[in-house]
Each structure stands twice: as C-alpha cells, then as structure tokens.
Length: 165
Length: 290
Image 1 (tube, rainbow over the protein chains, first blue to last red):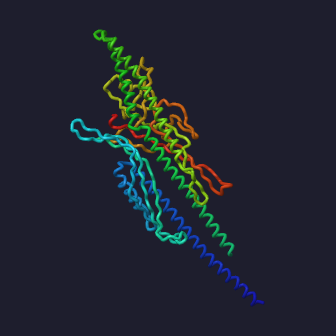
Image 2 (cartoon, each protein chain N blue to C red):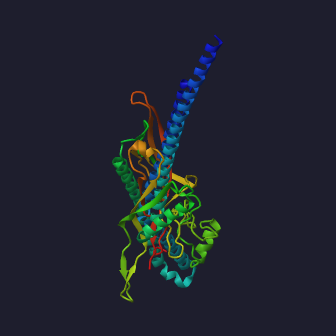
Image 3 (spheres, rainbow over the protein chains, first blue to last red):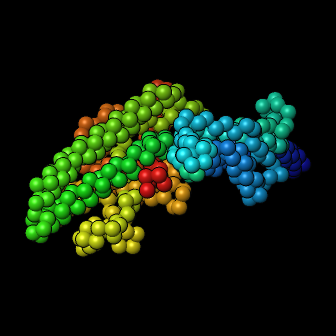
C-alpha cells in the first residue's frame, strides 16, 4: 500500500516537472518572440521619426542643400542612437525638392549682371529613409532572411526665404 | 499546471497585443500631428505670398504719412500769411490724400478676402484629396486627418514690419505719445487703430502683424505654439466655409483636424476621434519692401 502511494506521488511529480519544463520553454519562446517583435516595431517607429526629422531639416533652408541637411540630421541621430547594434538607419537618395515657385532674377542697371531677387521659395521636400534590423526569431515567422529592412517617406513644405543679392 | 501555464502565456500575449495596439495609436497620433503641421505651414505660406502683407503695410503707412503731411501743409497755409495764397492748392492736396485712403482701405479688404478664399480653396482641395481608407493594425483602424476648423489670426507680441521714422518729428512724437509703436523696436503695433490727430482721426489705419527682416534674411514660414495664437475669426468650421470679414489682416492660422479611430469588429466597434491642431505662421516681410 505504502509502496503504491509512493509510486503515484513520484508519477505526479514527474508529470509536473515535464509540464513545467515544456511550459517554461514555450513561455521563453513566446517572450523572446514578443520582445523581438516589440524591438522591430520600435525600430520602424524610430525610422519614421528619423525620416520626419530629416525631412524637417531638409525643408528648412536652401533646397539645393536639402540632401546635405537631411544627411546631417540622420548622422546626428545615429550618434545619439544607443541600440545601433540592432538597427541601422540610412538615407535613400535622392532627396527630392519639388519647387513650385521661387523669386526670379533682375538685371542690374549699372553692371548688366543678373542678380537674385529675394523672396519665398515654395514647394515640397521628400525624404526617404531605411532601417535595417537584425531580429532573433521574427524573420523565421515572417519567412524572410535577416536583416529586415523598412522604408519611411516624409514630405514637408519648404520653409525658405531666399535673400536678395 | 498545464492550464496555469497556458493562462500565463495567453495573458502575456493579450497584454503584448494591447501594448502594440496602444503604441500604434500613439504612432498614428504622431503621424497625424506631423501631417497637420505640414498642412498648416503650407497654408500659412500662402498668406504672405510675394510679400503682399509687407507691401500692404507699406501702403497703409504711406497713405497715413501723406494725410498727415498734407494736413500740416494746410495748417501752415492757413496760419502763415506768406503762404495763404497757396491754401487752395494745399486744400486740394489734402482732399487727394484723404481720397486715397478709401482706395488703400478697399485694397486691404480685397486682400483680406483673397487670403480667405485662397486658404478655403486649399482646405477644400486637401479634404477632397485625403484618403478615407483607414490604416489598420490589429483591428485598430485610424483614418487620415480631415480639417475640421481653420482660424485666421496673428501671433501675440508680433508687431508690424513698419518702422516709425523721425523724418516727420511731429508725427513721430504723436505716435510715441499714443503708443502706436513699440518704444524698443520702433515698429508700429499691430491689431490697433494707428489713428491720426483730429480732424483726421476718422481714418482708421490698421497694420498687419509681420516679422521684420534680420539683415537680408526674412523669417521663413514655420509652426508656432498654439498658446501664442490670437484668433481673428474662423473661416472654416464643420466642413463649411464661414462667410465674414476681419478688420485686421492675418499672418497666421490655426488648423484643427480630426482622425476617426475604430477598434474591434465591424458590427460592434469601439470608436472615437483623435484631435490634432497646429499653428502655422507666414513668412516675414522681405528686404525689398523695407
């Protein structure tokens, strides 16, 4: 009788141990997947933010230097970025500046040379950035090879008033 | 034990999905704010296209000075014997100067109406072109923002681009005593009647607020804090254009937008509205106007 009880108790403990082991393994996989997914979404949202900042910078000044300003903005962001080992941003050239209106030129009466008139430059600047991220498991679920890349595009009106010469 | 572990896994998944959906909601809110900021800046850029506000302020000031100096000439002719024979000519000059006032004022009102119309057309075009298809993520749908209300106005503590000059000392002194211009910057104040001394006090001179140039650089169109915005009247409300006029010319506008948010299945969704607003300020006066 005593022997039978001891055997049943051992069986229950073993069953629990197996259940806990399997359960913990499943839990760990689920948690890793969720953390990975969260990091992926974080990288995508960060890319959106980087793209918007770069577009704002690109639009605030002479459209001919728009790409340089966008690059500077992205480089500054990269420097601040603490988890760059997981994801990397880059600018997708070209930065498109669509100018719809700008001040013309006048011929100087004394020198006969063309001089730039001052005035507002209107139009939009479009910036595209890409983020590449190295997931642990998400790519297996999505059926893609790492690194995963995501693009974001932001269009901002030009904020520039050309000074007169 | 299996049940407990399944419950924990389920709980973690549910919390994670809710977290991601909430994160998506905030992300959509940020995106909506960004697009409303862009819209308000591009609308504001239209207000002072080709520096028309700066030129109008110049015109108002020129008309004001002309009336003042013509009145001075009439007074001189009446008071001094040697100039008395020029009195009819001076009267004629004063009449002409005063007759110029309604022309300037009429042009200012026309410009006000044109600005309203251009902004209203742009809003209609934006609302028409925006996509009504909502972006969906984990059964959370968010539509692109639609313009609900637009107010024209100005930014607090921004004076006009017109500097009070001491070329006409009497006018300068009169304006200084009446606080028509800012004693530090010497720029005429906006949003008040810069009236002339009697008997020309019946003429109303309103300057439009407009940032001045810094050297050769003009202030570009930009976004501003909504607390610094003073509304002069709404031009668009609940999808309809408002008819009406404002005394002052605007140099800024406030755009209020709404995005529809739905969560859950189509038959019984949880729905709400995400509100976003943005203030856009026009470019400043240009060096040539100065």
